[in-house]
Image 1 (cartoon, rainbow, N blue to C red):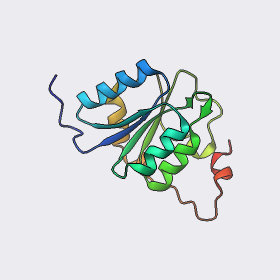
Image 2: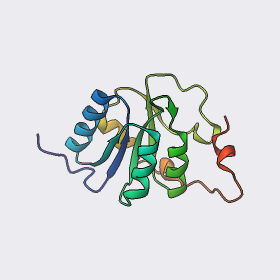
Image 3: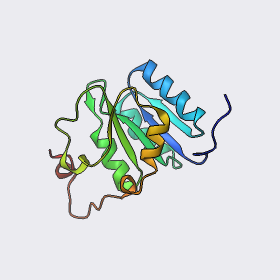
Image 4: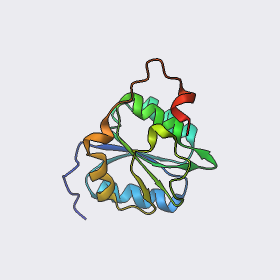
Length: 140
């Protein structure tokens, strides 16, 4: 399959703990022309990847990685002004207030749909964290 060059400079962090979903999503993103960081399957690995890979421009986050909620990764992404979307098999219940505007898609979400959402300006807005604690950011 020839990669589409619509998203040639977009490197996407994939945080997904289900191997089949992760590998399928990574292949689909690459086929759409994006680069992939990961996939990573744990919260700790996602945080390390963000520290290590300076060229990550977007992220697709499974809401729960091996029983841990991914919201700390979302906080870091917001601080860096990196767009992201959530994917989950669960309904969007209990989402912290500061992330209620972030797109939440059911799995499996098509790569092209994810990439188009990641290209929308409102997802790129960095979070101003001056005087705001991480606890407050994660409050529902």
